[in-house]
Amino acid sequence: MRHTEFWARLDQALGRSYSRTWAELTVVRDLDGRTTQEALDAGVPPKQVWAAVWRQLELPDSER
Image (cartoon, rainbow, N blue to C red; front, side, top):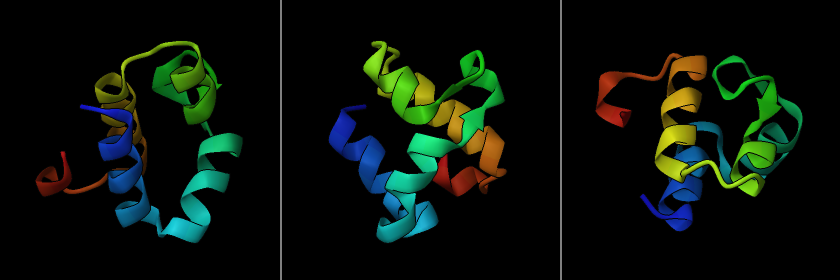
């Protein structure tokens, strides 16, 4: 998964106007206490970050 696909999925899940704020402020438990943005900036692969976000948001299997 590329970063562009990750952001497109997050935009779809949360809405474009909110997704960036959520990514900067919300700590995701499966990302070792980091926010989504911090994990991506640290080099965590977008696919791994998306999996953690998917679990945190309890999204349906179709959005996995």
